[in-house]
Image (cartoon, rainbow, N blue to C red; front, top):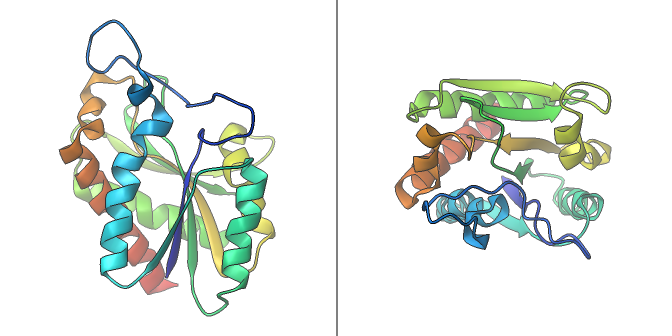
Length: 203
């Protein structure tokens, strides 16, 4: 299996976009380290290490427009036709929800199966405060259109690549913020690894 983690909200040309931010340490300032794009590595880097230890190949994308990253991911898949490739657009949610949500391109059957495997593993992990683990199909004109933009170019790639927008918790929910700590991020990471392995074992 090849896994591609995309550090989204980070590295866009001529933009200072780091995504959602919350004053996690209570000092009255939302610092750079408390922004979404600087917190997602806390869960995908341990996942990268664990997957590589299991013999899987892992890439991290962190620069360019999303369309360029989708093209790079599709090229990786095209160059490895005998491998299943998972593309994860890494995010952290905001807006006060109590759930994790894995969002696939509504056109993609394999993308839905990847989202379901990830969501099930997060549910099985019993992460405190994560009341539900959802799967949603996104399109350009439904309620998940913003998430659709994070993965939409993957569908045009070869048949061995599937994309999911990963929104595992809400940064602005106090009872979710433990997932931004090293221990919480490690537990989340373990759940994502379990979901990826669950997906590829049934692919």
